[in-house]
Length: 124
Image 1 (tube, rainbow, N blue to C red):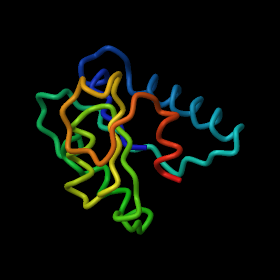
Image 2 (spheres, rainbow, N blue to C red):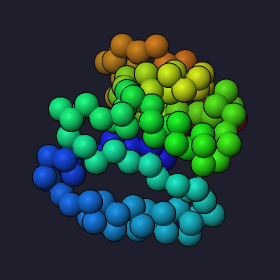
Image 3 (cartoon, one colour):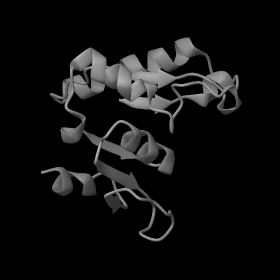
Image 4 (cartoon, rainbow, N blue to C red):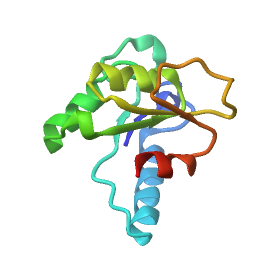
């Protein structure tokens, strides 16, 4: 998982709160037989111009180093065009943009879906 968490940088919540929520989420996935290898997050405010905040791709490059991934076989599922842009910078060609309608967002994602459940048939 790669996620922008600007709420930390904006002071809406603390990094330790995000980590508690993440730990809970990982345990819930684990209960359902889903193993999430790592969660990469950017805690910075959007105005900080850091290298990790999507559409920059530092988090993806860190995952590449940590897990020796073949990015051409990876998938990016995101709800913002910045997710798709980050993926493309790291040579991830399998991209899915989650929207609320087929017309509400312009994107160069390979696929566009209305529900996270719609991604299942695409990835299979």
